[in-house]
Image 1: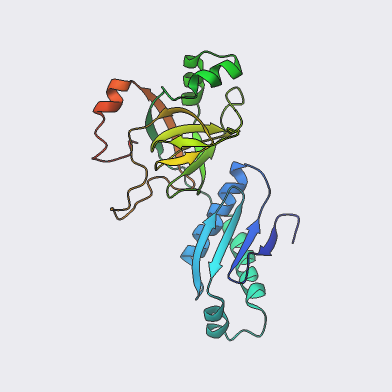
Image 2 (image 1 turned 120 degrees about the vertical axis):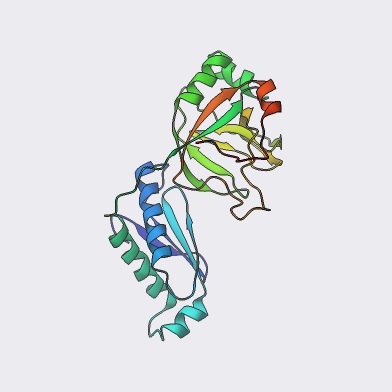
Length: 239
């Protein structure tokens, strides 16, 4: 552990380097840079690199690593050194600004009215505030293709529901300082303010997950009629 990060095991086949414990775009970009470096220079036995808000978790085959590199130390210590190397070598690389992804939303969600009342705003003010921000996709998780984005303006930040409800695919919600899109029908506790006609997860195409950590997203408002007419069979994201 250093002042910049700490490293700890997750069982005997995964290891995490944690840069902090907050929703922080700078730390998230560091974790993404480390992921990109490890994928560009993988070690034998590497299985996956998973980015979270301010950490990177590496999954590996311990037996493969130990045998291939004829280790005289523990696999954990060896992989930890690879993570340290990724940290040192990747943080100096400049990240190219990604093209902005614009996502249409019909803002007629079941929780829009109650959110407006809680925050003492009109429904249109909620929409205006939500669409004014360019969001960073921090991580993908919970469901295949579920994108955790942030941060929402504090004027519309609201806690999760105490009791989950059934949520439709494409629903756009807010939970705390986060906003996100449900890619599938699922129980969920986020406050639903709208729905997009875009399919953000399609298991039948080569790239099933449409948003990735590091993407930049801005929402724009459409009517219910436009939602119904939207051609979501074609290219699912407009840039």
